Length: 454
Image (cartoon, rainbow, N blue to C red; front, top):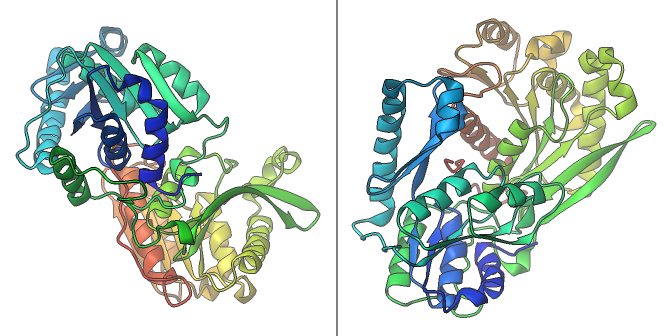
């Protein structure tokens, strides 16, 4: 585990020493990759810059990229994807026009009038604080090459071995310190994974330009919960629940402001990519998380268990009780999706569970039925604006709640929040709700929160 991004950068620089004489330029991926890149650049004696890229997504399937764009008009197109998706030129132009405007604004904000460092004929070292899917890193490598780099090296502290192998066709060399077989969230590999803001990126670029790189143990990049003296932890756990043990992943940032238990729904598990994405955002905001399986494999084989809300809610109550013993004095909230939201409300209605706040994402709170009126925990219901039937069920369920509650509708989102930017909105809303209701004397000061854009 790394103390923070600066610690990761110092360690990564050791592995990149062979590039010191290769005329390198270090390019940090905004925002989190820049504190890592700052340390690498200082130890290699190389200039530091950001590489601002945007993926061009297929209109009906935006997670599938048909290309990428970079500054100064750089444009890369994957013609195989264009043919497969049957894209027309006007469709591609509309996507590019939108992404070009977003890219220009982001580059203007981060560079603050600073010119881009030329890459022609040089070795471009693209650095991020961790790589999950690899789509942004891949785009950055292609853009660096299009800017004239003679050689492209992709460097990161942590990445899954499968993704690292796939990125070999985008970079001439991939350098990664740790390649865990199971990578739930990048933040699990850092004691301090607090958010990096635009102001910090600009400050680091200015310091690098002035030759002010940190000495050993210098710039920490840490937020309020950072520091080697307040180390967090991320570990695999097994939680006793009646006659079974439930596997989970517990992540606790240093001085956690609260802890959020994730209750998945409809048969998904602790590896749910959507819940993991939200959990990572909560970790960046200084909140601990527990991702766990509500059912063991044998129980999941009986589909009726997936919709047995008393069973799921009772089990969630056992888990929160176990957590209160592990992290005494820490406020605990529940984040539920689909049927998991009903389980979270069922557990919250039990005074013994001591649930301090509930957030539902595309949930079925109506399935908590008779227990809704007994819920006392402040409850946030988040529903996609295009998820009509579930939205109506949430409205009806909220009318039965007697606690503080709010219904937030995310415009343009369907049930799974697959549309670009919608899951990020869920993460921001959840962070704000949990920090407001979990942080306090026991959990520490509240922190601003946001999910960094891809």
